[in-house]
Each structure stands twice: as C-alpha cells, then as structure tokens.
Image (cartoon, rainbow over all chains, first blue to last red):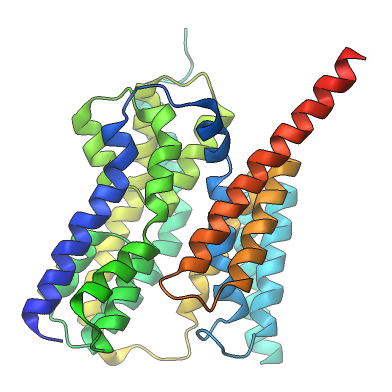
Length: 107
Length: 241
C-alpha cells in the first residue's frame, strides 16, 4: 500500500460511513415513517447483531477454519444468561468466565 | 413533574455505556497494533480511528490494503461491512428525528453498535422520554466509549508489535455483541428474527462483501415483522370471539 492509496481509503471511508449514519437521521428527520417500515425496524438489532456474530463464533480464526468448542460454549452461555437475566453485565461475565476457564483448564 | 431531567438522562447513558469501555478498548488496541504492524504511522492510525470509528470496517480495510486489493474494492467492502449503521440510523429516526440538525449531525458521527443498541433498547422500554432526554441519553452512551476508542487506538499504535500474542483479543467482539442482544430478546418474534439472522448468515458465510450478513439481517428482520403480524392477528381473533 502507498500513502496516497491509504489516505484515499481513510477519507472515502470516513465520508461514506458518515453518509450511511446520517442517511435516515439527517434526511428523513421528523417526517413520519410508514407502519410497515417501523415494524421491520423493531427487528433490526435482534436480526443483524446475531447475523454478524454467528460466523465470528463458528469460524473464530477466519472463514473456513475449524470451530473452537470453547468459544462456542462461551457464546452460548453469554446468550443464555443474557436472555434469562436481561442483564448485559451478567452476560459478559458469563461468557468471559467460561472462556477463561476453558483456556486455563481445557485448551 | 418528570423524574428524568436532561442531565440525569445523560448520566444514565454514561452509566449504561460504561461497561462497553471494556469492549471498545481491546478493539481499538488491536487496531492500533495491527495497523502499526501493517506499516501505518501514528498519525495515520489515529486519523483512521477518528474519521471512521467503525471497528469491523477498519479491520476489513486494513486487511484488504495489506492484500494489495484495488482501492475501490477496499472502500466498497469496508462500507458494505458498515452498511448496518444505515439500518441503525433508520431505527433511531422515530426517536431522535425531532432534534436540531446539529445534534443529528453529531449523533450520526457517533453512531456505532453500542450507542445504537443501548439507546434503541432504552427508548423502546421508556416511551415517556422527551427528544431532548433521548438525545442526552444517547450522547451519554457514546462519551466513555469514544474516549476509550481514541486513547486505546493511540496506545495500540504506540505499543506496535510488543503485545504478547496469547491474549485472545478477538473474542471480545462476539461476546460483547451477544451480551448486548440477548437482553433484547423479549418476545417470540424477537427470537424468530435472531434465529433466522443466524441461520441465513451461517449458510451464506461464503459469499463475498459480507453479503451473508446483509441477507441474514434483512431476512431476520422480515421474519420478525411477519411473526409479529401473525401473532397480533391471532390475539385479535381470539379477543373478538
């Protein structure tokens, strides 16, 4: 990579990311949005975050690598405790503890 | 009299956002370290983190730059990874769209997974908040995470190649995202949306440009909305009998 390419990427990525973030907040503002759109938006986070995370857990060392059982168990624990307790800290603590125990005693 | 003032909403956002320092820190650190290893100098690393503020997109761009991919491919792929922030922007608009333009510009610049997830959850659970209080809460959730993001990008860049490789920094991201999303799974349609998102994204993981992620998110969203309609109709049907 050369300096010119690097700065082209940094500045384009900055501008592009801002436009993505500003898109609805900036251009739609307080104009009403249709009910069907709002209904779909209620499920953005609960659909896209799991979709983002699932491949990172199953193929933790990159696409096509062997699944790591410890990471999968840790992820399921975080998910279960977060879901039952509705508490972010409990979920993080459960996931991190299982991962630490796995690294120390099993791996 | 309202019990929540603008200031207390900001402070509550600050408190709710605090644990995510533990998430943003390692990622900024890792980015700083990897970018320095790739040959970026301190000013370039900091500019990257300051201008873009998107961990996953920055890692994608860095990887492709090192692979000597064409500039256009680097930019398109990294933006594709970041496309989800447009959905976050749409999801927050019903709650923050009333705010003055300058606030919406700052809010847009600071829109990341954490600020979106915390704020959207809060706004949904507390409909009585005013737009001012919502904006205050939102900026509260951003404050500490952003400070940590910049400081740890700097530390990572300064440390460069000196970090021991045994520390599994890469697992902080998945655990953080799971911990954010699990408490949001309150209804059956939420579970359907998450399940469809996971299955589709795993099945399509081989597609380029993170297409599996978008299709997973999109289909999960549609499945959740559809499940909500079916459940509502069922309830309505029973009520009229």
